[in-house]
Image 1: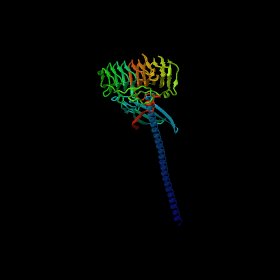
Image 2: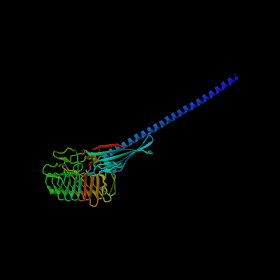
Image 3: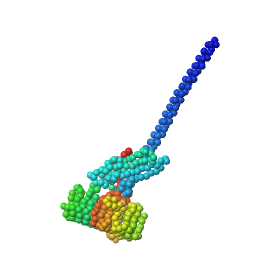
Image 4: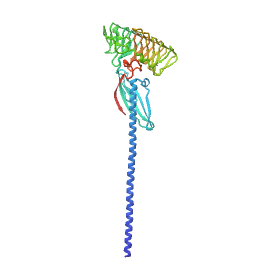
Length: 442
């Protein structure tokens, strides 16, 4: 009996040991499972947080890139000169403790003639002639990933005046000249040297309300018109164009002094600034000569007594130079740089109204200097170019004649540097339409 009791106790003790071992094993298994589950949940949380952070940053980067595109479209429409010349547009700001930035580059092939080659943007996109491409990159400081948005755009001119060169009096080309766009004059247009007229946006016409005298070779494009209300002298010197003469072909400019776009019957209104707008807030100068630097500072600089820029004069910034009271503007120094660094400035010489016409207000460029500008060149009187002359914008001699003595290029460019007072002809800001051709996130 004692022996049976001992054996029973041993069995119970062994059973308890087995149960304890099994409990420990089950506990370890459960703990292992719990640890795995906890780690899995933690890893998922970390990955989820990482994914959420990446998604948030991706959104921030794309928003930054698209904000850059919007700023680029605004600047393109207003034609910010330095940026349009290729200087990237940059802006940065703080977002949740991070420094966010966009940078926009422009690949501008807008003014290329049809048939010209495409040009390549920094990301390899081919930009055809007549189009412009923005590449906007969104970035976050110390973050390796960037996002890009590429936008192809086309500019459409909405203005009421589409002439590269216009005059209320005669035009005399005494040197080799290329005109990109339309030419029109109320008086005789004379070509004494070989010249060419190239169409811009489908227009490259030669129009005179009086006569056209072609003493040298004149090359135009097929489908364009050479029309005169009087006679065309030596019409065989004109190549390719549709040549016609006779009364009523060309509508003359209205030179009544009206500052609206409502012309007299049978006329077309020549642009004429609203002086109350042009001179509002201008910076006035009493001096009549400058031989130092003129800082334009995006302002209208008004010289009521006229101005002569001596051979040591120079220019800084962009803006408008205006003379008043029938006084003249004379350049004895160069503006802009060869070969094609166009200086962003408007040049305006205002005549004095005598009750029937404007008197004075001439612009002249002396021998030995050059003028290469992007903007409006406007004179109530004559424009005399003895220097090499290149302009992208519109050149207008309201009452007077235009004469070239040095090599000249007149290029109609429908986004001149903003000049107040010409809004009635849609020469002010906001008068261009920019059409989106493509918009691609990268």
